[in-house]
Image (cartoon, rainbow over all chains, first blue to last red; front, side):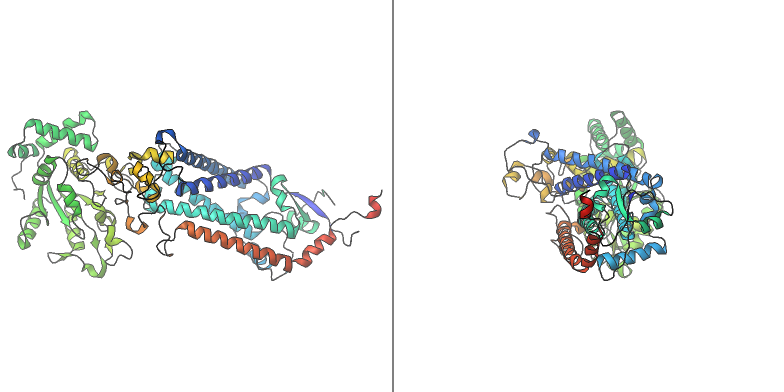
Length: 240
Length: 373
């Protein structure tokens, strides 16, 4: 029994590189946060007993952190590249609010989804403007943690790549302040992840656009009107 | 006070009764210390034999004289003898015999005689607040005095953390607007030798380098000599294997402290401090703080007073009281976020009820009759 009928269109929003980026990035952030926290506040293995030559526990923690940092950075660079060659949903221009439309959308999202004091249909196939702007902030946080992290790393590595960051320590005025900033970026990611995961569940529940699974298969579901308006071209109906 | 006969350092040493053997041993020791290769020792010897003593003016501004104390306690006896007596130390408040107008005249004369040639050593920061009233010497403010002396200097050495970074008097809230000297003078080669105090041998080594090679030593991005500040205390620390193993002291009197494990968790600043303490050590190579069981305080780093408390790994977060670290605040924000989203989730089910029900109603539920087909 159905009362009304709506047509949903399947849109291929997240291309494969974007999906790989997302999950690799999530894994890296998880690993970096856990090992990073341990580096800042190491667990003490034992009281007395073993000789240092028997163990390399903290060395491994740090190794994993540095290795994950390289993966994280390269992954991020690939994503930036994809912002120039990928589809409209991954375009780098999305991440900067520059037009009136962007700000209007931000205002709508604030009113409808965050404060929930207005009712309006603001379906967007890709990210909405607030999400885009939040990702822009995370990119800044990525940059800050990469710069401060490799800045500290440059003091203990002769690698050509980390030596590109020799300017960082004098620029920030010492390793101590660098360590502090780097540590604070970790908490930014923790708080970001809490909101991010919640909002995916929220939108999946409220919009019914399949956002939760979209990062697995790449597909989202939008109504015909929105699909036509967004694409300005002939839709390919996938499913009624 | 040295007289003004222009003797070479070797001649001076002979006058003091040192043998050729002592002299060569000193040159080899200093050469090794400043990081020249063994063939470079000949350069040091030749320089000491032929070069005239440089004129040196040592200014004491807003400081505690611990740099001078450290310097005159350099382990090698010849360091104090030769460097202090033989470089023509024409003016230094704490060590000169002259006082008052006599001292001022000596300084003025030395500056005039050696204009453009003398080396200016500065100990202490410059309080620029309230027109510089917090440090006046000979009727001049520290700033005016420094600028005047720097004008004719060949090179300037900033002794200690005060001159390099401002040290304790520049710590928050910096009531006298204590300023490191690199922000006051410009256009002169400047060597920063931070530390509270710097290691005496390091100070001597830098002077010998200037004497021997006539150039300032290779400096890092922050203007410190690479030979002494190129590595972190942590990188040369004998307790480093404990760090890599994950063996840490948690309290100063625990079992791990007795075992000599790494002091990282009790706030050791070794991993963020660039200095030669773990290599050169102090008091003639006797010991250094970590060897004595106490973490490094980071005394050669900028603003090390403001990144306290000293006995905790993470500095306290500015503006949140002394014990509040970034972790406390981060955890607070995380919990706040969790509470916020929980509230949002509840409100969603209330405010968006109609919308969600509409979705359920409009979803394509197969008709019963079609299902039978």
